[in-house]
Length: 205
Image 1 (tube, rainbow, N blue to C red):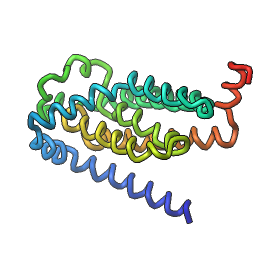
Image 2 (image 1 turned 120 degrees about the vertical axis):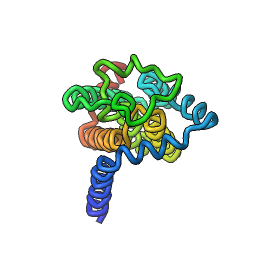
Image 3 (image 1 turned 60 degrees about the horizontal axis):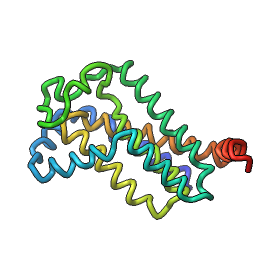
């Protein structure tokens, strides 16, 4: 029953990606009408605290803080690393330009255009992948943080569209891919305990 429910959810999510691809321009233009000073500063703050480096150190510190959770540090790192590599490969393969580069919407003032003009293409959103790939691991080890992190991940994804850096399909696809990576690594750790073996070997446990 759970498997069937999971399959249905994934089918619905994939359909939502396909629909968002069709309505990408409409969606991002609609979101651009929400721009105001209050939302600008709010989502700018979300952008500042959601860089890949900050997410890496915050999550690492969280798992280091609880000794009985430290075996999950290596699966966490693998999850983030795989997300970064897959995101990079997809970006340079698909080479989709960002919305502001295509002239669909303007780039919000204060966002750096130069940092998004060379290899860092639009599809998928690496920020969304990083945020969503951590959800399965946090759900497994810190269930009380699950809802908070899901809300945080959704805000990260929305902020990328709000600022004109991504289309909706970029962040939806990034979130889906990241979440799937997290699920696979959680399953691998449960079955093979590779994170625990690495941790025990390094710290002679």
